[in-house]
Length: 318
Image (tube, rainbow, N blue to C red; front, side):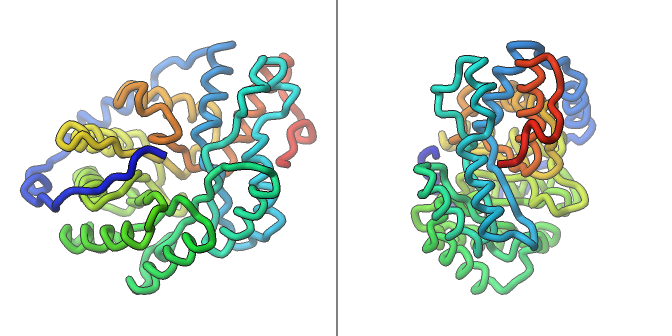
């Protein structure tokens, strides 16, 4: 990933001045959604690029070592080799950006990737995911245990109560402690934007998370009623841009929750390109949290290569 974000001092004067223009944000979101997508070989190229941004995820109550092992294999071999050969990219080492699992499954993921000879990073959710309503001591210990087991990226959830009640200093202090507990692991901070009440709160929480040392800010856990949306993303990306202009630090962005189709992924890549530029279109600064998106991307690649859509048995989840 990119260089660590050391964070800055808490600047509440900056936070207090923030007011998001919601109608303008919604108009911008409509423009993105109405945009025509690329076609044919250009679409295939962008879809293959999208694969490299995916944090391939399983966060189910019935996760076992065997389905984590299958997930890791799919992360290393995301697209069928014959399809890659047809596109002449079979020798490019195409993989997903990371695999993301619960803390208890980190050891399984590390073991599976090592057995496959892969250096794909293992990300773990933590801090009482998805609600973040456990004691702070417990949340910090969960981070430490995940890192000890081999996770190199930690997706933490914030305590939404602190945002809704305007306790910005307390939120900053908690995230600083999360960062310290991560050690050398990168910190991705989940804002759970669907539960923050307003776009202004989304901007403020984004800025606090970056000031506190987050390497990435992430929209959602995927478990909320409302997850990654374009209006929320625009606000978070503008916050990332403002933070970069003020500090020179590039912070990553990760939308998650509800991104299921290849068409969705193209829209997200377009948004990043337009709002932050090509510099952010790397796995070091952009990720997509998804569990089913890869299947649809592979299906579209299959269609591009063969001229027909795949049956379910043609593209099994390995």
